[in-house]
Length: 236
Length: 292
Image (cartoon, rainbow over all chains, first blue to last red; front, side):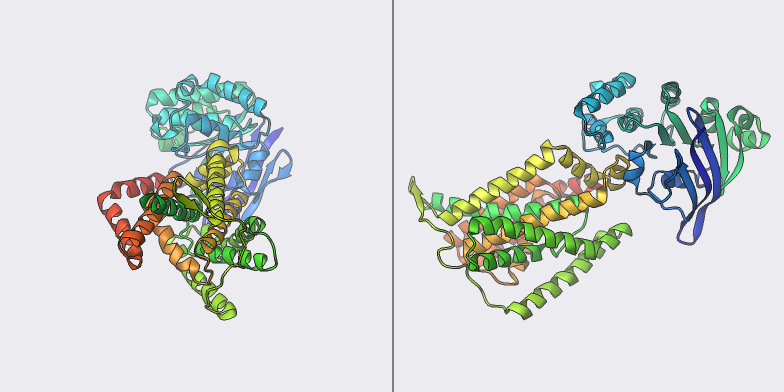
């Protein structure tokens, strides 16, 4: 049963079509990765899913309802939450306030406290820094905060845009281990990555996007063995 | 004598601070230099004037005028700036659009009402002056003080102690990311416009009361002071606007009292230049923080 089905998605900036007729789907409980070069249209797809861009054509069906063109804050309410590119923590606010904002739509303070405990259990380093401004954290800690903040919304489907960007290899490993643990806890994940080898290792299904179109798709293990993918993305 | 002057200066400064609070909120959160802000000040003063002429007590006319000014601010912001925000236009664009709009509004208002100075109905504020420790405080001044403390305190409470204030601060830093938290940023921006306009309107009523003079262009000279206060206080900084507003009021009253009343604006703007000369880092620090 697919949680999210995207069909014929086309997104344009003015006259330039950045994404042209993209189809893909994400089954419940999977990690799906979308890999591709810089400028291939990965981030455009993600920003359209989360409502920051309006599609020119196509459908985005989440749990049976077409959400294409809905405002970003309404899409969050439906359980699909984005961890944006470059982390985008609220640098001037404390770590605790950043987490609190993630649960903006939750009116129940006891439930918010419970979610916060769960997020801090997953990211113990954030607990030590609760009163610090988010801008004072290291890049890896900021990525953890960005994921923790998204988890505060209790998402069923998490969209991650380049979580490995600018991080040291050890930290990337740590972040990807967390993504695997999120899947074990029942959260479906769409992962956008330039770090194709790390993404293909953890994903169930992979899509390769080239100049705004899906060039290749299949089980991640097969995509990882495809000679064209090896040559273009895995440094083979 | 000096104590009385300081007191008068602080009361005047409290009104400047109130006016600047709304301006700095609008600038810091909505990221537009909205020059129509001065018009809400004029509008508030006129609405209170009309309401008191109908016999309403000033204690009721003040909140009513503030709420109406807030409503005008939401409407003007929506008409003028929604499109610019969507197109992510730069600050100079909003500056020019709102400059044109505010000049049109002042001119239309003058054509409609005439340029004359109007006065609140005599006895609009009942009661005599209080005297204590050799200081004299009129009932009007008490109302000004009470309104400034309540409104500034209320704004600080909203911004620092509530979830709504947290969402406003988040939106000020990253509007797009705030929407990803599920915050309805369009509605929140309208609320911020309303609060700003209401603060400006309340400021207009209080200044009208303080000097007992209400005319269409009163918002214009106030805008210049508003700029001094928010630039000296640090753009978008609430505590800075409070401190700088009080300082400006004291400086103006002391200049008028000990030098010459014609010099008070010269001194006020010299203060602006001097502060920016000696402490530009304060200003730029805030500007960089907003863009980081």
